[in-house]
Amino acid sequence: MPKMSEIKMKKIGLTGGIGSGKTTVSTIFRELGYTIIDADQVARQVVMPGRFELEEIKAAFGLEIMQGVSLNRKRLGEIVFANPRALKKLNAIIQPSIRQLVQMRMEFFENEGRIRTLILDIPLLYEGGWDKKMDATIVVNADKKTRLDRIIARDHLTEQQASNRIAAQMPLESKTEIADFVIDNTGDRSDLKAAVLTFISENDLRP
Image (cartoon, rainbow, N blue to C red):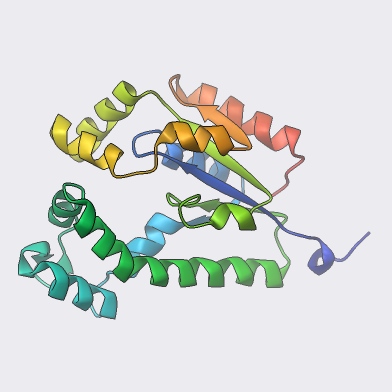
């Protein structure tokens, strides 16, 4: 039997579109005992008070995106998702740091050799070329109306604001075409869990 450190860790990329339910799928994997790297959580960390990225964002977008010493994420979102140039500017500030931290964590788990499967929950999985580093990719899919309804209810946005956020991303249809596995999320949570378990079984994945 090989030593744990000699077992190659499988890396599974998980993505979708805003409102498709990717976070719920990530939560199901976590509940099943899998280790997750969540790029959204990393993104929140790189804009914490005291980080140089926050100072660059403040310089680029002005004090209106601040709430005391913290970033007003909702106000910043209203600005960047209504303006592709502003979104590009924001990504130029934060994405290099997010990428570096995600890469460092991935390498840590690889070198540690204690887990067999790592789930990387990355919204910009394909846009950032992360799919090339994965053993397999999962895209969580849902129709546009379902996604709009979820975004409006969850983030208290107008339909136009929700549409802007969908339009700012790589089309979900394009992601499903190149995914290794597509999970449809138009049913309930039990359907989602069944799809996750199918993926795990088909790929012989252990935590």
